[in-house]
Amino acid sequence: MTTTPAIDIDRLNVTYGDFHAVKDLSFQVEQGELYALLGTNGAGKTSTLEVVEGHRKASSGTVRVLGKSPGDRRAVRRRMGIMLQESGFSPDLTVAESVRLIGRLSGRTDSEQRVLGVVDLTGKAGTRVSQLSGGEKRRLDFATAVYGRPELIFLDEPTTGLDIQSRDALWDAVEQLRHDGSTVVLTTHYLEEAQQRADRIGLMHRGTFRHEGTVAELTRTLPAAIQFSLPPGAPAPLVQAGPGPDGSYLIETFELQSDLKQLLDWAHAHEVELLGLSAAPTRLDDVFRAIDAEPVPAVPAA
Ligand SMILES: Nc1ncnc2c1ncn2[C@@H]1O[C@H](COP(=O)(O)OP(=O)(O)OP(=O)(O)O)[C@@H](O)[C@H]1O
Image 1 (cartoon, protein in one colour):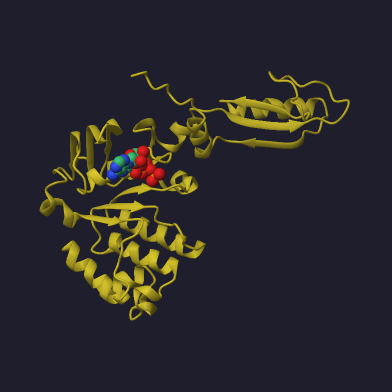
Image 2: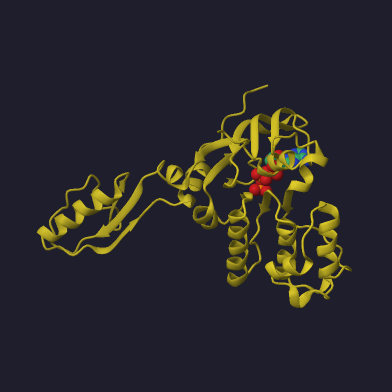
């Protein structure tokens, strides 16, 4: 039996005047997934998510959210929890009043005490929003995603400004929501969080996907690196590259484990100490840097 995807996007285009911000973008987020929509600045993530969340009309293309049109607000709004970069709660409201407001606006039901507990603001229930610290405000923003355990949750830069304890607590709460069946769409510039948490990643650049897949699939697009130096008088190792200007060797490889073993076997057989040896698997940061290094396409002459 096939299930309806939580999000189904087919050839989405978003234009602002004659600027093409999102270009023929197609992807699906399956129910229960944690999908990270990542990208360079100005890639079109926000524009895409605004359409999915029902805040913006697509210029063309088809978008289905929980099997419905995102414009069908009555059908989908109640089922989505959206944590924006800033929720804009009124500074004069207390934390408890703000949480009640989330309930009224979302149409979902929940226990105020439970939500305050999950976002660790029980002790601040009577405090005005204007008197919260930056991290506490962010935790209150998170209440919009937690309240009523929505089926589909959008987290936009959720951990910005949070200390390590609050970040861990937020991710524990997200895991609990996923355990209860929620689908999560994450945007973040903290790549290590996406690397750690996401089932799949869509990596946008200039309005379209450069890569889509699991972390392993994305990092497999680039070689891993082994680096070392040799003591004076050591024999030349059996590697493709010679020493660089600083005398160290760099091996770029798609076969990290077997090439590392070969190098260690060689060093052992020749009783050579590999100085400053490091073997680093490819990280998402490297995939991002490779995209940013791409040349800017030439603009055709008018
Ligand atoms: N209302 C608008 N009018 C004109 N151009 C816009 C508008 N909103 C966004 N853009 C442009 O569209 C492009 C995509 O913007 P968008 O905010 O979707 O990118 P993003 O991937 O979310 O970027 P960031 O990571 O920097 O937040 C950018 O070049 C931006 O300047």
